[in-house]
Length: 320
Image 1 (spheres, rainbow, N blue to C red):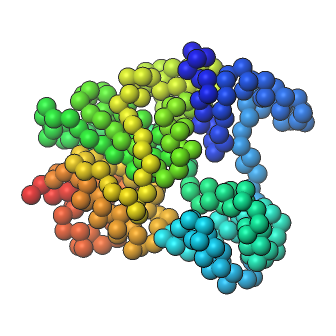
Image 2: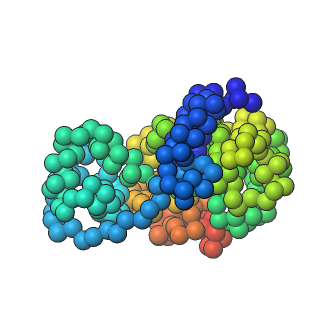
Image 3: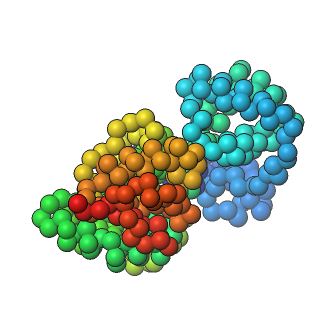
């Protein structure tokens, strides 16, 4: 069991943990003994969650200077919504105790570590197993049986786009395993460190908070009181690859595509480009599942897609 954890990373909130179990425990104890009595009551290390108050920063014209600087350094953020970019930059300016974007820009031009921190902060990785459980229940009951029936004896291909640490892709695998073993799931993300976590399939128990005890026992092996590992029968059906939704080629002949809580960060033109790509990736009769706060803004411009369920943001490609 300890061999499985050697040199693996465990998904714990937004923090990356790596190393052997014995080393992790030693570092954990060292951290705890150096904290106050209140902090010692924490049973394991958690990422910092103290909120910061984001103040209005006057020189917003400098944001364009920062965006151009990021572009020259290979960080393309022009496709993100401007308000989203402003919030992320404002958070970094506040955390560095600066009063202007110009001060932060001067830091970025000199500090490669801060540049990397900003790059990572622009990607949201909030996820957990069966997030929005009622949507997964709907997909399990209304979508998957139709996909299995239509596929007959052919292998079912599923894509989890923007899969982060893999919780969504493995959640889908858990549902599919109850219906058939004739399926494969591809998870994709733009960040290498998230893909590494996804492949390791090790998670803090906070990731399975929305699951019942029966589900936890069925789909996970418990490594210690705070760490679980996806069972091999579920894990082996899923692969993960790096993919930029705005630049790279999409996989073809998908029966279902999940892309939940990703489009909300992109500008309208980029959203349209991504949706067009999904339509081309789907088989006739295939399904597209978006996030609960997302919708296809102009379904009339996508005549090959129909709304399958508005509440859960499930769409279906017409079976011509």
